[in-house]
Length: 354
Image: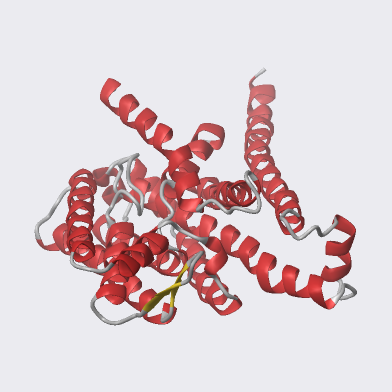
C-alpha cells in the first residue's frame, strides 16, 4: 500500500503539470487562429485564399500592401502589446502582493498621457485637422515624451518605495494618486489649448494598435522579449515573495532588490508599449486574474500563461473594434476598458469581503 501511494505521487503531479501546460498551449492555439481571422477580416474584401497566397508571396500588389503593410503589423503589435501589458501586471501583482496592481492602476498610463499632451500642446509636436480626421504630424516626438512621462511616474513610485519605505500595498494607492495628479495636469493643458490640440490629445489617449509600424513593433518586441526572459529567470523568487517577505528572506531572496528591479522592468514594458499605442487599460489586470483561476499562482506557469492570455484578449478586442461596425474602427482602449472595469470591481469587492 505504501509503495503504491508513493508511486502515485509523481503520476498525479505530472497530470497536474500537464493540465497547466495544455491550457497554455490551447490559449496560444486560439490566439494563432484568431490572428489568421484578424488578417482576413476587414472591409477590403480579401478572402482567406488570397491571404494565404499573399503570405507565401504569390498575392497581388494590392493584397501585399493590405496584408503586409497594414494588417500584419497591427495583428503582431496586438499580440506583443497584450503579452507585455499582461506579464507586467502579473509581476507587479506578485511583487506588490496586491491583486489590483497593474501598469494602468499605478499611474504609468496617465504619466504617458501627460507626456503626449505636453509634446502636442507645449513642445510643438504640431497637429493638423482634416475634415474627417486629426493627424499628429510629429509622432516620434509624442512617443518620446509619452515614454518620458510614463517612466517619470515609475521613478516616483520607486523613489517612494526605496527612500520612504512605502509598503507594497501603499504603492498602489500612491499610483492611483499619481495618476490623478497627471490627469489633472493634462486637463489643465487641454484647457489652455485650441480645439485641434485637444482633439489630438484625445485621439492619442484612445489607444490605437493600427498606428504602429514594423520599426515600432521591433522595439516593443525587443523590450517585451528580454523582459520575459528576466521574469522567467526569477520565477522562483516571485513564488517565494508570494509566501511573504519574511519567508522569502529566509529562503535567501533579496526581497527589496527583486521588488525594485521587477517594478522597473514591468514599468519599462508598460511605458514602451503605451508610448507607441496609447493608453490600453486593464489588460495587465484582467489577464493574470483569468489565468490564476485556471492554473494557480505558480509563476513557472503563470508568467507564460499571463503572456498568452494577454495577447489573446488584446487581439480579440482590436479585432472586435475593427469589425463590429465596419468600416468604422472603434478604439481598442475603449473596448478593453469596457471589458476590464467589471473585473476590476469584482476583484475589489472580493478584497473587501476577505
